[in-house]
Image (cartoon, helix red, strand yellow):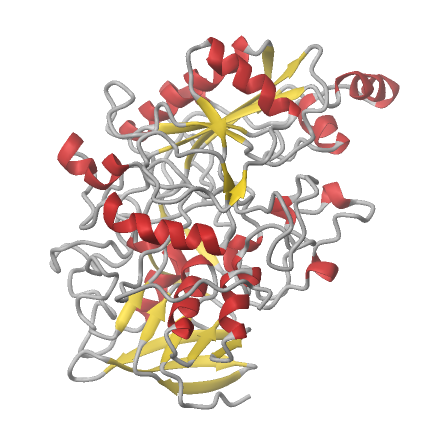
Length: 555
């Protein structure tokens, strides 16, 4: 397949950042080519949540939908952290020996290659960073400051939330809003109501979690049916993943060309630093594509990989890497989760994943002795405890008739609380090129290294303590615990092409434009200087004089 020329911009990647950038460019009259390395998914075919065996299926792995990655140093399991070891009462051998290497989890680097990227299997949380998160170094002496502030980003949060029709109720603490939410908040499920009640008895402020999931029909899409299967893929289209929001609206302009199964393998820069063309493999054939403007949005692992793969005689460290910062400052997801069974609780398998959230400890300095903070969330449905198989394999011990009896008595009584914490980037965490492993095209795979520092492990202990205290207040006895100490997991990864005002210490400037290349922008989480202890969804890649008119995906 030959790709016709005449495009004003090429966007590499169709996930959250790439889709938003493509929509914004199309809305301003540019003809845009989006190149997506993965396939297009068909909800009716690929997300069969209404068929037998649904609980045994995770998000589908279509051919080409998972990147090839390798893992370097992920750290060792310190005997001093034995109290943070994962375990399950049902008897799984999750306790790893002290001194063993920290392995990647079964999910590992779990991002999706496909039209819509990882928004296809995200649960729909739509958060904003706390204003103090943009000044982490100034406030704590740790991490880095952003070259922009919350006030700069707030209008773009609003645009993204209105495009995705985010449902919520009131601003999160400290995060002012110029407009209310596009839709009314979703109701809390039975498990969330139990967690919220316990949290309030402890003096905590719990709120309904803002979500890019429709609470009422809109834009030609139905309201959520509360099946709780968001992470397995949404067959109805009520979840605001970008293929049914930003990309649909961009396509309606008639100025979007989207090519799936198209892997970009190299960027080429001219003598003036401008990116002149790129190499791609489409349908097994090599293509050379000229472009006056490039937006790179391949994620915090594949974006640095492509920049490093593009090294040449004029750019021996890779494209956009005169600072040497490409691939550095990698941040994984610092997380903890505890599950218990609560006598008298029923129906905890019902409702949306992550439907309730507590921000009390989320801002810098809120946890005494720590630079970063953490959020608490109700996670019973998110952790997959919405069917009997999960109970039988993870929570309830036994065999045969005794197991069946226990399942009948305990199903719907599980309660899970999770915490996501701020990971301070350090020199040990990075993404590079593997010297031996190759992908299907013969190119070096990305190699991830991510060691939990003493600071991260100390915050993890605070997170575990807060979760255990809350569950005890709710009447739950822990039967399962999992956390970052035992395994690397990366549902949210950030930081490998840092944004900053100093070109010698960052990859892109405040407008997400590469310091080294005037027509290259990066529009994904790789540019984030800090994590902020929340899930990140909004992007501020484009600063046009005025926002284009909002358009419904139905038009």
